Image 1 (tube, rainbow, N blue to C red):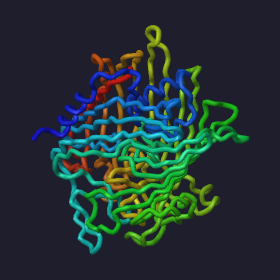
Image 2: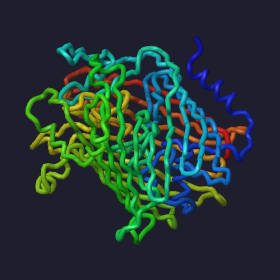
Image 3: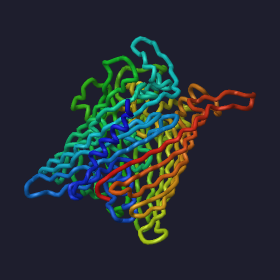
Image 4: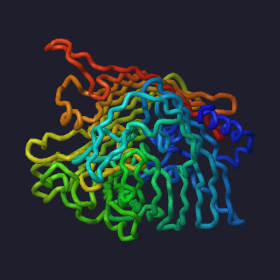
Length: 532
């Protein structure tokens, strides 16, 4: 049987035939090459800054102009993303694509249409993965009403329950996903609609605490500002979202709790005194729900209590849970520099007094910088990037229960959709450090990067509290892009060294340990056509 990704490659070759350039447009997928080029243009002063920290593929896509006939149509240039992992899954911010062991692929295409105030983006994504076997850890839980699938996470049982399977099935798959599709009715002051696209809230390049491209996009209704609202403080943008989250097929065997509601509100303010500064806040609330009633949209304003503080170590009665963050981004185009950060809490404070006493309780954060400067000739740039994220348990665990980012005692599946975290790509209670350097020209670039991720710190402390067993990935690599005939290719190679995989390290002597270390080679290639 041929690999599913080879089938996607064949479809891409057929779709990428010649087409007039004025009928094609690129869809800027989150965490993709097109989004990266927009961000570099902002640092050079060639693109507007506002609205970028509340982003999606549709918000980054150039708007279609009105036409006398009423209908405007553009085809979305097809884009094929292929990844190959030699030993272990490695899949960060790939949207609905889960890159397991072996070859995996995602094909995006479709159309962008406008008729008056109605805007349609039809961007389904074909997905396939080889899904070769690798070592997993199983922890059978046979308690009545709580039996878990063999592929369910061994480290996310109550009280920190979560739908985070180690592997999505045990065989190769090929299927079609609604992908980055949306239908919007847009007027000057307000826009509303329905979408299945990924959302990214916050300024992070690698990790967004509440919304990112790590999970598949979830179906949702939305209302947002059509253009920035003028206020005495500056321009204000807002988005209100009501969505439906689904359980994966590899979590439990209870069909009555397969869906949840998500209510979210995000605000972004560009102060009147500096157009390069963006400040914002966001809150999301998830709740068990067989169907999603419209009044669940108000959950983002409701008090959900502090379920992690309830006595006991089991699941509580079903109810809502929340995440909250504040963020900012400051761009200095005259210097080609930006600094950004996001800080959040997994538990709402009981009072202002409590917040002032232990503000770091259940906190998570991302901070980063990016700088571009001319180097080696006209329109050639040197780019430097760095980002640090931490969701590890805070020191407030000494005085009260901390809980864990994306896990929940009230919602067994936690903050996930189809078995993937909606927030930071590194996942629950993890931390990461990342830096990169690139030499860039208008039609090519070459660079190198170095990353480190410490996985599942809460599980390490709870189940195997021995510092030598920390599960860590070291991720050096190279990347680049170049024209390839009428196509464009973006590629990267990562040498992944996984130390103490699944916390496996065994004593050799009383003072020496030997870890189960695995080398994983990841090759990622994106082929696209259309406008340069």
